[in-house]
Length: 388
Image (cartoon, rainbow, N blue to C red; front, side, top):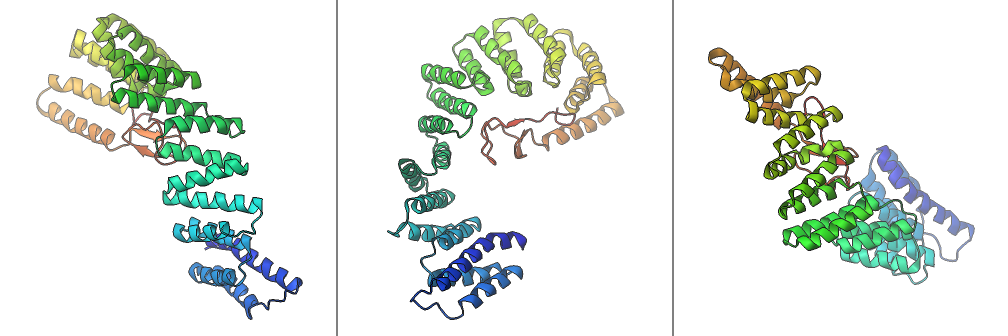
């Protein structure tokens, strides 16, 4: 109830203000009888948690006093917040159509109508309004921020880069991280078209925008791998550990494959041992366990994983230990281990793999752009005993 009250109160206050102003000036046009009663009746509906009836009252007040620009704007914003975008659009369109608006009032109305169009998914109309605001030099930062959001939605990465940089120049905050992702998006598109030259150029621009861009390092590793440059691919993937260890799980298999193609298993083992000393995650341990099993057999891998689990608890590590032991036991012990393995697998598979550190969105698929809060590089693999 109180949320609705605070949304409706500006509309009621604006209406009451204009009513009082009209009386103070003693306008020649006679006010509608009972307007004061409508004002207080609307507030009464708000206080009694009847927002629909309150809105009806305030709409009638706006219709009577059509010169109240502030009242129209407040009512339009209220409709947009309630999800009634069509009604918000009509109100703000009506404002813009008024020839007597001041420059600032027109700018305010353009901004609000642009927000209405964005909420309705009418990005082409919203774009035109925000570009007009830039021409008017009104609400510049807000207009640029909205334009960047539109170009992200439309996947027009060239325009997104252009307007993000204009946003930064206008004092809208740092944009290097998101600009790097825009170039990474261009690199992804080039890869899908098998244009590795264009992919390489886009990645150069990504690193120029943000030298610590993990995504660009992963993509560079993928590109070098496709070109058969295994040493360069390894270097790119290894850079991820220096940029952000949380993303190691995204490149561990890629590293294994590149070391294998280069015929350097010893180099991979040495690198994994170094990672285990520097990183808190379980990914290097699991990779080293697989390598130990292939080269030295199940028992050596069992001893290695058991030793690691004494120092660092991990559900994934425990499941791997059970997998190693299952082929070497019979009878009741095998049945018990099978049940335990099934439980561990279900525990891991039922949980999300990635989580956004900004809004908490969780899922099983990696997103560089959070589907919920629209932030870049805030989704990471979940770390911890159960997750790892």
